[in-house]
Length: 323
Figure (cartoon, rainbow, N blue to C red):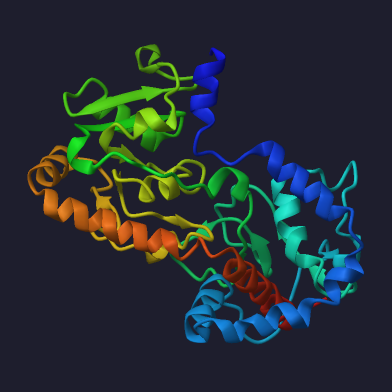
């Protein structure tokens, strides 16, 4: 990849350099400075719609009563970078950013990575199954460096290509099925970007975000948990196309409304051509979905409010667990 294509591919993505510069700088500050500011931070609640914030907090943290946490739970005071325990990864920094506001003796149970199950004890996670009793899965906005990014799309939906584009690693059975059905279809521009694939014909060069935005429809199939591209698709002037999600993160994928925030297709993908043709012919409906998606995205872009909600989620966690 030449330097111009690399710079283009980074456009719209979060900067690794700036993220780690900010977080290593903050890490160097003494924790007592943050603990002393917790009350002042929470006082900011009065500046916002308290009912809305309570709804978000209770969506992420559904704990009731008091429950014990895992024996391997970590003291807030011990939640520090250590060679064999915690590495300088975004999961660590995204938790530490808020945990350091709380007393050192508080304990926190952490499950980092793509979590597809519901833990036995209350735990902080990035992702959880939408269905079932998922109270023990308490969501924080983890790995937001990769997952929480948005774009500024200057191209109108009407001026984009009448096709669906999809570029991703294809090794899960549900993604392979989609490629088997629609690779080479006249309405689809699909390609796999991983080399360990069952069909070498699917292998294509990666596509930049700007190149994706040339298309009216962008595929958002779940991977190990959620579809990581869904957030930036919904901030664009293209339509996200996907089955109803089965996992959710801080983005509250479980609250998305089919054919209101995104174009829903059946889990067997059989109605894809019908759905694409419908929204190509009914531009007004497509534009309404895009407008609804933009409004949904906007709620995550007030950084001060997001910080307040994160602190309240952790505050509720500590109030409902024992160790």
